[in-house]
Length: 210
Image (cartoon, rainbow, N blue to C red; front, top):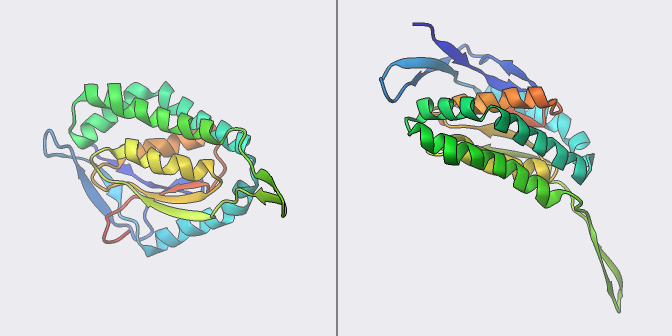
């Protein structure tokens, strides 16, 4: 049986683990190994963090409307491949295909579009008061890390990724090693959309190691 490999997505490219270690990914319906997952080490984590740091300043200076446009491109990419995403999610997690197709993957699209709409046209606010003019500025935090569970793999992954990117932050994001496939597919969408390198880095691997 041919076994595919699920790589990490770092600095806009798919990379094998520096350690050479891989984890088996089982098909819940058959118990067979359907793919192997990169088990990222601290060296891989460091590379992903550095990629995010390198991209952080430029991404943070990107305007709200530009970031909203990028998120909508990601939504468009997932929506265009909705059936493929649904089938991958169903096989990887063992849930009914209709659930992935009718609810979970459409919600991924909605997550990106919601936060795109939330920040489109956003900016600082000013308030006049007897003491003078007060102003608020929306400033990105910088680089963040997010972890997503196995039960709603891409749904919850996108729910964390979308608001962080929309508000000008770069990310190192780790999906569950039990359901890694659609996270890798999201990396492919980032490439297709032309998302700047290092803005979103997806690290595959076990919780203990990665």
